[in-house]
Image 1 (cartoon, rainbow, N blue to C red):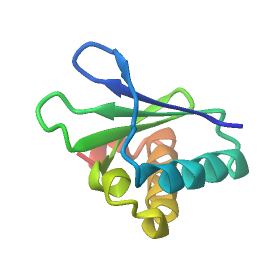
Image 2: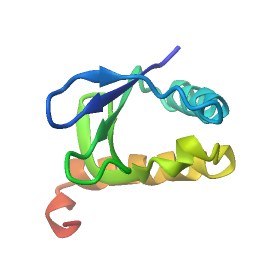
Image 3: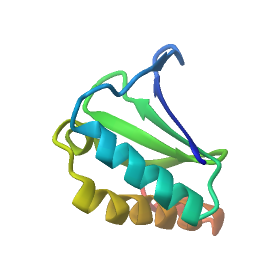
Image 4: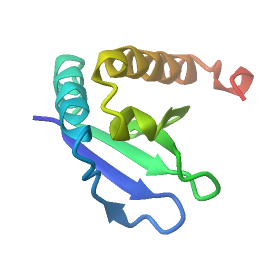
Length: 102
């Protein structure tokens, strides 16, 4: 099972995504991560905008974020698509195109 974590970008401290509607979204992300070969997925809360959760897949921190409402509003129907976009950002970065994504 994939390890999902939420951390504050400002201090690296871990926090829990405890919103009642988040459970289904978290379950879907774990399934997605397992299916796509990621043992670790970390969401980093932006220090300037707490609604931005920057995605880290494995060891790669990406230039891609997911809005916190995905979890608080239980948007499980869109999270797989968002994670696929994150994986695309990871592949662009690995191919050297990350400098064009800023």
